[in-house]
Amino acid sequence: MMSEILTQAEIDALLSADYKAEDSGQTKLTDWEKDAIGEIGNISFGSAATSLSALLNQRVEITTPYVELTSKNKISEDHPAPCLQVEVSYTEGIDGANVLIIQQHDAKIIANLMMGGDGKPEGDELTEIDISAVSEAMNQMMGGSATALSTIFGKMVNISPPITQTIDLSESTINGVLSSEELVVKVAFRMVIGNLIDSVIMQLLPLDFFRELVSMLTGNIEEVSHVKQTTPTPTNTKERHTEPQAVFSETQSSPNVANTVDYQMAQFSELDTTQNQTHNHNIGLIMDVPLEITVELGRTKKKIKDILSFGTGSIIELDKMAGETFDILANGKVIAKGEVVVINENFGVRITNILTPMERVQKLQ
Image (cartoon, rainbow, N blue to C red):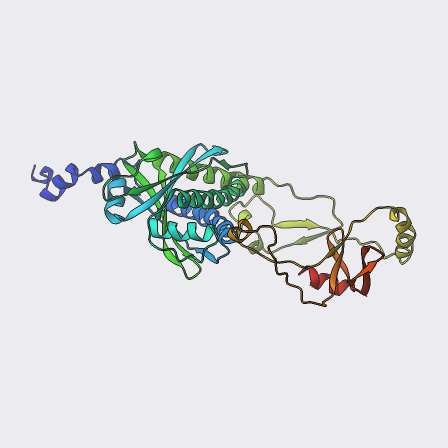
């Protein structure tokens, strides 16, 4: 009878909501589930970082995520500073939604970069224009993530435009798609943008959506494994060789599978030296194809705010020096250099240099 008496620690554990959640087996994350969602996040946010880098013209790094099961109240306690909440829903391929939490200061820097700034805004308060700019950045970022998910799951994945709002976690809790959730899966990434941001971005997933993603990944792995195991061995061969068992670990556990591989030597036809002559004759078939010839005076890059300030009489400085030769392009490809001349009342171009194939390749690079 004495062995059936509960200790005070056991009584406290039974009364704890956390104990009930873990003991149910339905809300405790296994190591496999953490690794699975971490790998999904690692690949998808790697693509998201590439998209964000191109958009901000800054080096963007997102590190391997940290995954844990937590509560919304715990997140509010750990991150009381004002944040930007970005809710992204999936419209095709995946049924669910997730929430991104970005610190307000980081969002202000991203918005500043989006609008052509130097990433050093004055103050942290977000205006409607700032929120709109960050929403577009998150849209492009999660679009890159959706493309990566399409590759992972082998089907098209699309998202809806994000719903963005500011939230003070010290005064309220996370809402939106997580309004009815008590426990959420937090996937935390370290995000580095140039030398401007070194912070943490959080992805919050409803528990059911998290389970669905893990299930989809597991099913995809099993399907690929099944295809590998059922791939037939070629039979039409000229030579048969016995390979060591260590080369094919998948067959080691099955004693009924022969450790042999059938293959045949690749056959290559002899080179025909008359083919080049034939091609030279065939070039006459395309002699009448028209090409668009363009002379490029020069190029330059301007920020949106500079372009909006253009008016009649504005002068745009190009990357060409006075007296320098101009590029001559055929269908958008540089083929020669030349100088501008005047013929009667029309402009013309005198070719001064025909680019070699190597020079054309260097010009493209």
